[in-house]
Length: 215
Ligand SMILES: [Zn+2]
Image (cartoon, rainbow, N blue to C red; front, side):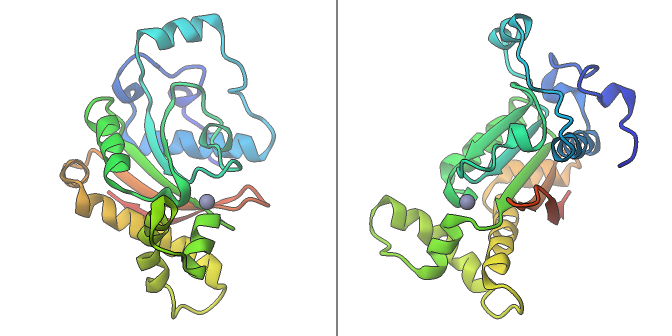
């Protein structure tokens, strides 16, 4: 892991300007370093002080947004060792990018100045398993699972582990859908102001594997 530039160290960042003043490259480097600390049991962001809470009451200045699964084992602030106020997190089973999830990401980009959006899938995702099995498309659960089915079908002929392939395909489809569906995301990428990263988290090892990068 390369040395983290001093200004990006969690103790030196400025949490009072939009996007914490980070470029998309700097934001991603901070996430990677946080993940390294998590993996090596060196988490720094484990306490919240009274001063932190008072600062939070004045406004929020996250430096990255993350669309992830609602699964209880994939908490972004823990996995990337970030503090309250650092990440704008949108979580829903299977990290489905529907209207309200996209609206939330657009808010983070347009109003909070984030330069990085991560889509985080994970191995053994129950929502992806359900989509592979097929469910009654009626009801709320059926509607959500139906959103994942096209991704599953796109990976049907890939060699290797079917569930792993489906998890990756769900991340890939999500990364492709975001700029297709959102003019805000499309424009920010075209202007060089936004990066989308699609990755998969492994529950057992804690590793992340990056599968998609846009912008
Ligand atoms: Zn999941």
